[in-house]
Image 1 (cartoon, rainbow, N blue to C red):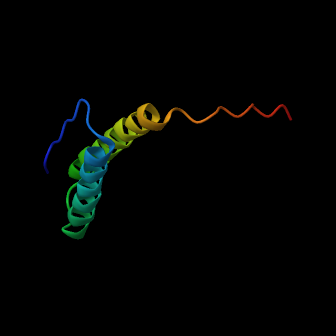
Image 2 (image 1 turned 45 degrees about the vertical axis):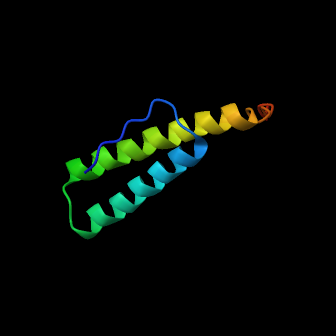
Length: 71
């Protein structure tokens, strides 16, 4: 499994890396990879989603916060 680390990148670059990681996960599952390999890939996907979320927030601004429900 490839290990990718991106400190900062464009939204488009992060989306490409995320797509790669998802395709890699499908390949790992199809070939019956170990739980350790799948977990490492899952963590990479989560980290990339977090980076993409931050990059999108920087590009477009954070969405307005909705008030918490009181009921």
